Length: 173
Ligand SMILES: C[S@@+](CC[C@H](N)C(=O)[O-])C[C@H]1O[C@@H](n2cnc3c(N)ncnc32)[C@H](O)[C@@H]1O
Image 1 (cartoon, rainbow, N blue to C red):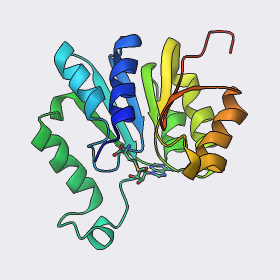
Image 2 (cartoon, helix red, strand yellow):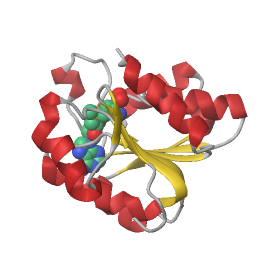
Image 3 (tube, helix red, strand yellow):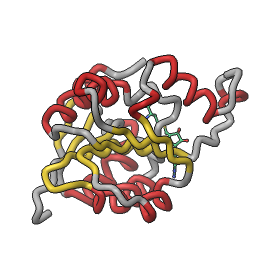
């Protein structure tokens, strides 16, 4: 189930950044980015790039009927979001190197170890437009060393509501 603060935070970030071109780093089963996709659908335009290696063994771990990527696509289709997404299969930092778009909103929710989060933040920040928002999940006690440590290291400070965090860097940051 989606965390209320994450849903609220994502909705607010979509509005605040006037998000049209968005990236979710770590899409899992496609349900966590519903608030972003609902915003794009309401505006009848925009795109969410869903970056994930999509190679978790969910058939064994969660007893799902379909492999990770197929289940992701099925969930997106069931929610009616097909036309708004572009899945990109690959390791996030490698995908960032070849990504050529500039994003209004980047949602970081892939690896949660400190080095993984730092790597993702530094890899994706150059793709954020001036005035855009970078945000994510799990800035809480459970990920004090990982997510929070990485955020402090990269940004110094960040805003948060519950476990949802966000930063709207100024052009000089
Ligand atoms: C916490 S889940 C994402 C949850 C999702 N954002 C949601 O709210 O439902 C983490 C996802 O990141 C993916 N992932 C982890 N490390 C990755 C990496 N280095 N590159 C690409 N995907 C990665 C995993 O496959 C998994 O699907």
